[in-house]
Length: 193
Image 1 (cartoon, helix red, strand yellow):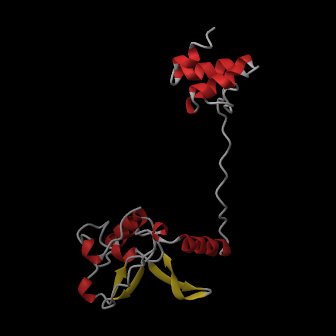
Image 2: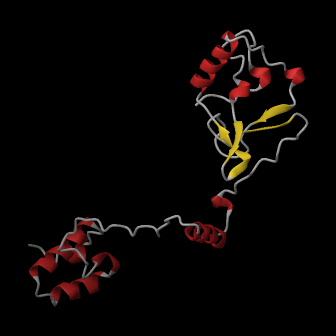
Image 3: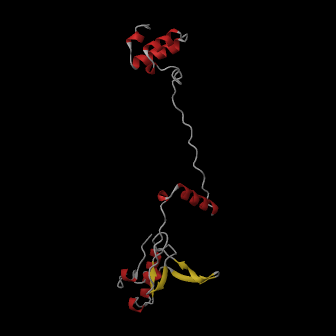
């Protein structure tokens, strides 16, 4: 984007730099903005070409001792010459206080909600967070949901459950879970095969 050139930054012997500082943030006032709040802003390549042209046309170099105004960098936003908030102010005028934007992470939940509501009021489209999309997962149909977990029951309780069971698939599932878990002989020897 280029940099904001100040009078002390320029090389008066370089025709392309000689007028760079004075060709930034040129105040204009016309129409509804008669107070001159609009600014002419150019990319650095154009200001260099104008500076070279003015030097070749015989315009004398800028004399900082004769200046009654100084350039003030933009007080908000990006710090580059295309930000129209830069300005020319009196030489003795103090710099304005820096604007500090509060970090939303340091706010309470209620303060963040108030900021979001204010932005909505000003016309910004801020939607509630999108709900999580359901994702597919692999489910073992035999084991989901588990009807009986032998690992949380005693040997007597597991044997009683298996004795009264009519479902061969469920019996195999319980025995498999027991084999992979505690592998208690009181259950596995009784229900071999």
